[in-house]
Image 1 (cartoon, one colour):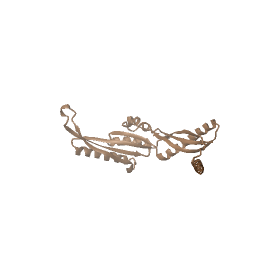
Image 2 (image 1 turned 120 degrees about the vertical axis):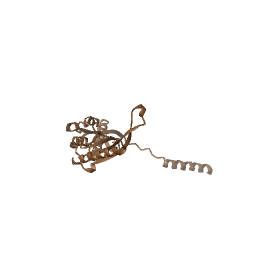
Image 3 (image 1 turned 60 degrees about the vertical axis):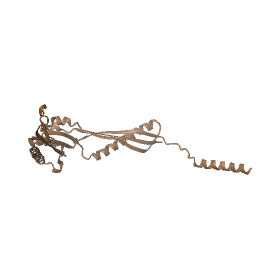
Image 4 (image 1 turned 90 degrees about the horizontal axis):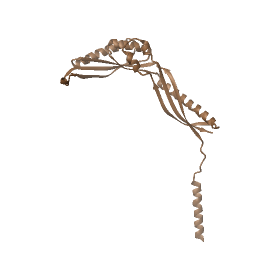
Length: 235
């Protein structure tokens, strides 16, 4: 009899402990998940101009000297426009052999080609046409890139993301009201994407060697896009 009572008390104790440790299921707060978007159009206020100087000569030394002489002239001409020296840099200097293209002379070196790049950062887009004309006249014989950009891109990014979050809140408010609920606090937010799209530089490169026309180099607008996902509580 005592043994039966002991077993019963033990079972009751185990049940009581299990009841204490079993988590209670709490009602979940309903949520709503929305995507917010923002699109802005801003005027470009700076440009990145990529030039190249290519020269060919009989010897590698002559090719090198020709390239360096032209580069000095190009840089000097740009400095004369008032562009700061720190905004001009050279890069990708190289010398390579030039081979005879005739089938019977494929391994015959007939000269050397030297080239170097010159990158110019222009903080005044009004200078683009003049910089192209000046550089070409001084010896730059290739325009390899012209990209329009926006100063203080980080500030622009933050402002566009703020607008995307506000757009998400507006959508969530409308959806909650339609469901007969009140919109609660935001419990999470995630950046989904951000991009800046400037006009295709090929539009400018097609005109870039015909120097001088400011209208041909009008920067146009840069399109900025941002998207976020926000989760709100509903009351």
